[in-house]
Image (tube, rainbow, N blue to C red):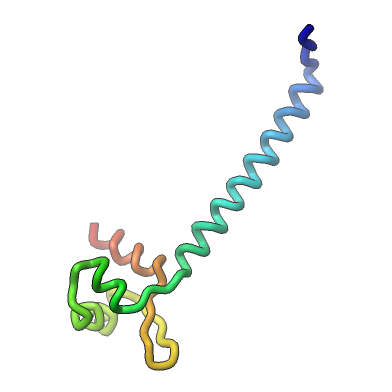
Length: 89
């Protein structure tokens, strides 16, 4: 036999669903933020864009793509790469 839900039952179920949904959204946002901060080197970006490394260095030098230098190596955050692509298309 099924139980009839009271308004209090429905409120409790609704609140639990809201909490679970909020937790899922927080996890998704955290995953997106982590992915956006992952670094690519110039070789990886050149391969992805089908450009030469020299072209990537030029885009960085001219300020089209943000980069970070760690030691002697230059890296691009995936988020900055995505911003560059979004600005072009």
